[in-house]
Length: 531
Image (cartoon, rainbow, N blue to C red; front, side):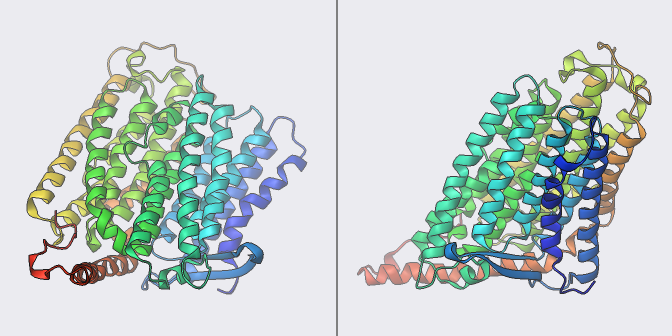
């Protein structure tokens, strides 16, 4: 097919349109629906890979595979989509994780039609967020994603699923209000009303408006990332959600928060980002340390992994606040790397739960002898999470560290404190992950294990799902250019744009002081993040 074919519209619409036919499929036990949904997920992923492989040029930061059609002109809503170096890797990651989550859902037999319908709708919404070039369209896709997650947790979750689902929807819905207000403020500023991101980027906003819009987006995306103290919904959601839903939650949904911060806060609002960057750096360090120590104190397997996700996403905040190409590179790579690693860990936690019927680690033990394949896969993925050299986690976190240390904006004492705090988190991470492996797989078996169709250990389907996630983890770890080449030009462009705004903001600050009748020579340094 030609490059003019609506590839992105097809990728976004396919799961949603296919979901509408699920009620018409004659199937009593859910077996046909299962195969149908898996086929749709695999086809959607295959289309994404084909379009990117054949029609996406990694050697430019320009927007590609663009499409724009009037949708609701009365509201100024256009179906405008396109991808660049920030969105393309996450679009492909979303397709992979969603397809594997559908395969991981093979044993779902409760309301299978509704379950697979929601999973496919969720996949469409995720793709829409990463491809949207209209800010109102992005908001719409962001909102569509909330309902399937709420229902997937509340219907197929654990004993406290209603509480966890309600907490999730309250946090994210409140964040959405801030996002909507910021969106409308940016769109209606000036002589023209536009939600198109390209047009919004051409507007020159006053610093006060940028700061207010930045704060609104920061709350909305900070809930999803999540940023301390907006994080408390995440451990509850993960501990109650089923393993496939946790895969999507950790592998893709958290990355929507990081993507939104880079796309809107950093790229669209550079002057406000200069003001907020030191705060993001501090919040990132808090995330890393707080998440690591909190994870160490958890006895529930999935809650420990959830707190680990909070810790690892702190590196995304630090990277985007560094003002360097290396830092932004590390932030994007950390999102991709953590998406793969977290999806694998939560899937394996589900495999373990299926055999032990418990998530309490002090009730497990001795599983290495009974489940050697599961033990090997869990160990390999845990090594990736603790940033073992040769795996993607090591490359992404090292790149973020280099981004901090090479930044010329921050003072050395501030950088030293941030690096020290991040290093503390890195030291605690192996401790709680190795402790997890010890409690679950070593010692004496304390559980009543149940045999599956293929025996006690991981079956071929479970091995395949984990292997599909481990292969890119190893590939990126051994040859990082597999990932970095896809977005390097874009991160260089964004970092250059931020640095270019530094002297402009300084000049504006001096001019304002002069007009106020204050001697420029008597002023303190402009309020730049030279902390």
